Length: 104
Image (cartoon, helix red, strand yellow):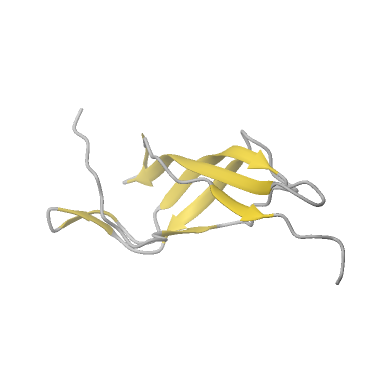
């Protein structure tokens, strides 16, 4: 099996629905669309607009006054020439500081 490490724009895909720590849990599936083509060695291997399937790996809402919310996702497959091709990806989990409910 050949592996490729692709250097692509920071956000090469667009989620087709919003994800949230309030609404989504680990295991929830989502769909995304490539915003740019993927090239290897100067040859386009995935066209702009290709459909990606993935799932939520981590979903942790923040506490009311402290803690960090975290949402992690990974991509599982892409549609390529009418076939579904499995992917192995590693995407960062995004965290954000809790917002205080107390006004000052």
